[in-house]
Structures are given as structure tokens and as C-alpha cells.
Length: 246
Ligand code: ADP
Ligand code: MG
Image (cartoon, rainbow, N blue to C red; front, side):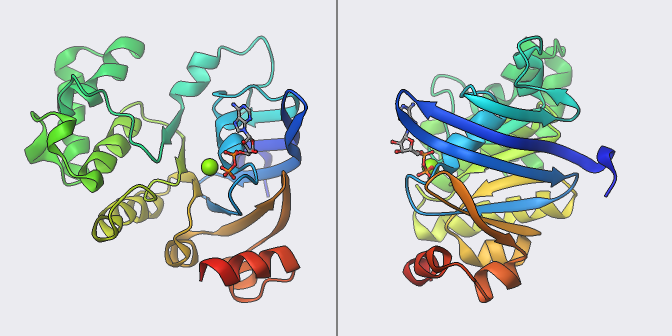
């Protein structure tokens, strides 16, 4: 594996909140175009890990390199790094007083200094891609959960990120809306986006993940292909977790 194929390099990452050690020693490399799915019980540190990757949380110790930039270094412009890493949350986090299209145009205009015309054109292209073009001028309150999440994905893509992080993107959705969001994510994966996805959707993990990372209590307990980790888990904690979610 060549060094320049590695999009995300994490070495001995630790994160504590006060005395609470949440990430105890995480090391992982994510290759360009790779889709990893993070599984693990509630409280195991999955969200904290994703949040460290885009500096929503500051690592307590260890090294994180994204696209060759050491983001754990004080010298690095975190805003520039963040622009390069899209994040999609469980609760959408759309701006309620802006229309769908305005939600998508905002960051490119303010942070990338794109003209409004360019941002609008790009925004419409992305809305088409997630099947939401006809809702460009409505407000988030008028959308279903699945529609909101598709807009949130388009908004993250508008910054043209190299890496996309998804933190339980379908957990807040009614069951009938999960599929439409997973479909968009599958398409993104097929197009070669580098992705780290926290989800309990085992079917998605099986089908789309190149690698499954099973976390528990701040450590990576087991990792491998979906075939290895989901169908033939070795570690008791992985087996116990899968018995509960499958
Ligand atoms: P997961 O996403 O796997 O459910 P989290 O990363 O959200 O786990 O949380 C791991 C642990 O860290 C939990 O015990 C949680 O309460 C704690 N935690 C997360 N964020 C904070 C914070 N900002 N301050 C204090 N404790 C936190
Ligand atoms: Mg979480």
C-alpha cells in the first residue's frame, strides 16, 4: 500500500473528557475510496472518534493526518481541514430559517468565496443527485426526515470534501425512510468517496463496507471485511454485540 493512498491516518489517538477516558488507543488508516463502517455499543466512543477526525473534538493525545495535513498540529488551519471533511449527523442540523438551496449554498459562498450564481448551480446539481431538486425552495420544516437527511448530505458535498463522515445518519428516521438515505450513501461509495460511517444498519455494512471496525470501551476490538467481522466474528464482545443487533 502506497503512502499517498492513505486519506486518513490515525495513530495512538486518545481522547478524554476530564477523567473519563473515551478513546484509549485508536490506530487506523483509511485508504482513498475506502468505506469503513464503525460498529459498537452505545458509549464505546464511535461519535467521539468521528468528531476527533474533523476536530469537533480535540484529541488528547496521538496523531491524526488527513490528506497529508497533520490536524492534531497546532499550526494547521482547522477550518481548512474541516472544509475538506464533510459530516452528516443523526439529527440533520439544517438551518431552519434557510431554504433547502440556501442551506447548501451557504458554506461554499462564505467559506470558499464562491459566487452566488456558482453556488446555486452547484447546489442544484447536488440536489438533483440526491433526488431533492424539486424541494430547492422549501424550508426544512416542510421535509420528511429522509428528505432532510438527503439535503444534509448534499450540503456536506457542496464543500467538495475528500472524506465524508456519517454518524448514525438513519437512526432518527422512520423505517420507511431509511432506504432512500442509504441509497444515496451507496451511490456515493460507488463513486469512490472515502467514507467512515457509524451505523447499526448491518445490511448496509455488509453490502457497502470495505472494512468493518468494531469498537468497544474506547478500543478497536476487531476489524476486517464484513465477511470476517459480521459473519465470522472472533471476539466475544463482537459476537455479543451482533447477537443483540442482528
Ligand atoms: P458512541 O457514539 O459510541 O455511543 P460517544 O463517543 O458518543 O459514544 O461517547 C463515548 C463516551 O464519552 C460516553 O460515555 C459519553 O458520555 C462520553 N462523552 C461524549 N462526549 C462527551 C463530552 N462532550 N463531555 C463528556 N463526556 C462525553
Ligand atoms: Mg454516537
